[in-house]
Image 1: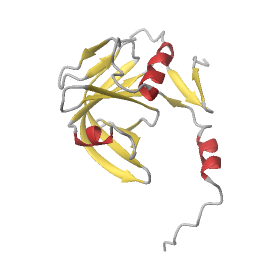
Image 2: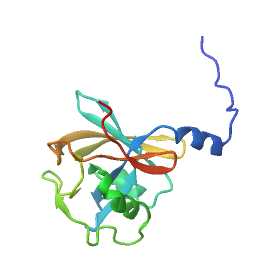
Image 3: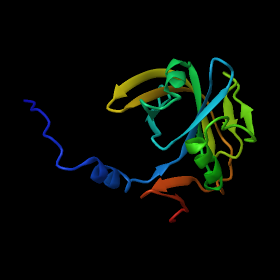
Length: 172
């Protein structure tokens, strides 16, 4: 037997505060507009979905100015940021205009999309499916190529938690 969901007993501010307790990695998702312009946005809503086939997901606000490009494009790259890349995180979250000006990157093998220099790791994805939920669209990407820039594991990741940026270190 199923029942209808009950109404929340909290407001959006409280919900955001509770969500903030969950630490997340920070990524920059990159693609290319039809005009050839490089597009990139900061996202912390990244997660693995499946090993077979290899799938990952991330989400983007429906009001984002880059939504039409990401919705229409066949490919994108998820760049996992290192703690040393806080400046890139902020740049791709706030800068208007050409966010790639002066940013070192290389072209991905399949689609020629930006892989940011210094990222911990990256996933080149086929834009497999999109799901509109609430005020965001969930993008599911089928990973076609991926790589680790820091094979020795000495670089720490950039993490966002409680409205602040952090880095992490192993406990053991």
